[in-house]
Amino acid sequence: MERIVLAPVANLAFVLAIIASAPLPAEDVAGRETVPNARASEAQAGSAALPLQDFAGRPIRGSTADGIPEEDARAWHGFHQEPLVIPVPDEALVDRYIAQYSSAEGAKWLAAVMKRGQPWLAFIRQEAAARGIPPELAYLPVVESAFSSSAVSKSGAVGLWQFMKNSVSPFGIRIDDWVDERRDFWKSTDAAFRKLEENHRYFGDWPLALAAYNAGLGAVKRAVDKGGVRDYWILCDKGLLKKETVHYVPKFLAVATVLLRAQRNGIDTGWTEEIRWTRIPVDRTIDLGLLSEESGVPVERLRTANLELQYGVTPPDSGYRLKVRAEDEAAIVATLARKDLQLIRYYFHIVKSGDTLSALSRHYGVSVDLIIRSNPGLQARYLKLGNKIVVPALREVGPYKGEKIIDPSIRFEGGYVVKKGDTLWSIALAFDVDPEALAEANGMDLSSILREGRSIKTPIFKAEGL
Image 1 (cartoon, rainbow, N blue to C red):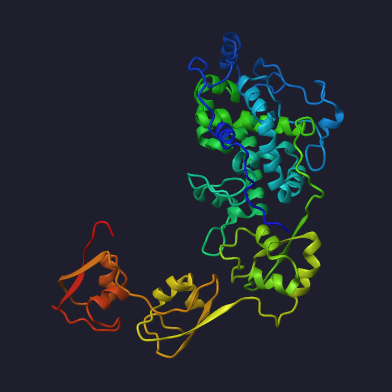
Image 2 (image 1 turned 90 degrees about the vertical axis):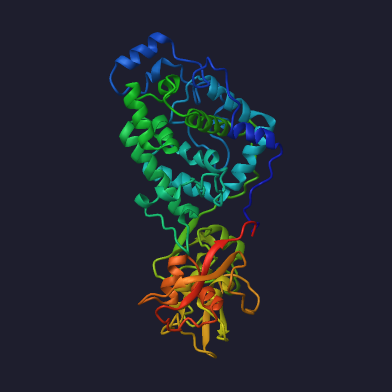
């Protein structure tokens, strides 16, 4: 299987135009045709929620009733099988994005994005159907991440659904040294749909639910309270939503509309199949490379499906569920059933003079805690010469040849007078320096006992330019 990577875009300027649209005339409040004053006043004075069929008095685009051939509306393989559920109003900004995504360059870009999304789209659509939410929500990753599970935004949002680190705890998304489940297409899709459902329950309106996905529930709630109306388009007209959110919903509705007419717009990804997925519980640490060798399943197929793994290795704790294609399930289950099979690589390190766990951690690219957990009984402060330490091989590294402990940017000069109870460890902590570096700078061992009143060298500053 070819590796899923970001497909090249023929015209970068076009893509940038989609992502960061040029500002529209100032008199057009939010970059859109404004609501007639009488209609806006009526909405402001009315009840908090407007009926969907009224939709702020705007004309609604048809789905299959506006002359679109049935074969286009029921677009080919894996795309929409029904008309859009979320109303698409006849708005200038929606028109603008439909024109961009329908152009030759836009269709080419959208086809590349949908090809990238092929592994996930059938699963996401199935999840939407199971929840009874609008099926077009399966296309929201086009706007969020261009269907890239490895996407990272400038603000630090990650994955298909672009979750920030501080927003995932309510949804059970795990982020630690082993995994970042924002890149887990299965769990992040569940989290995204739960978030959208929560927003919709609150507002009773899908455009507002989408706006809250982009801007946050609190921001949209404040806009609704200030505007006195539960209507996304009127809130935009009133200038109560930030520019990104004003463009966000029209972009999404334009993508959904263009994909509804995929054949007419020349969007052809060349798909030949829809990919189905299953999850297999694992109860031990497994290197995906070794699992691939033993099972015959291509390693890139396993890595693409489990991008949340920080090192391509499953966590040591039980409970992880490996995602595999349905067609690969039998081979993976049979391989995992061989309990005598070693599916993790290790380095064996013989302790030499000057070795420290922090230095080994830096070299092998694993945490000190993981080294300790892999070596029961190991004393972190007292490494015995000649002892063998097991280090999980989470990345390819060369032989360890030791390292110079002292950071050349740190200057150690005398001045600190040892007080009762001081240790090299406590002093290192106070000066924010590695204890090994402090010991080396003073010609001591970490186990050395400090005599009260003794003067020792401590870091005084970091040299500029280093």
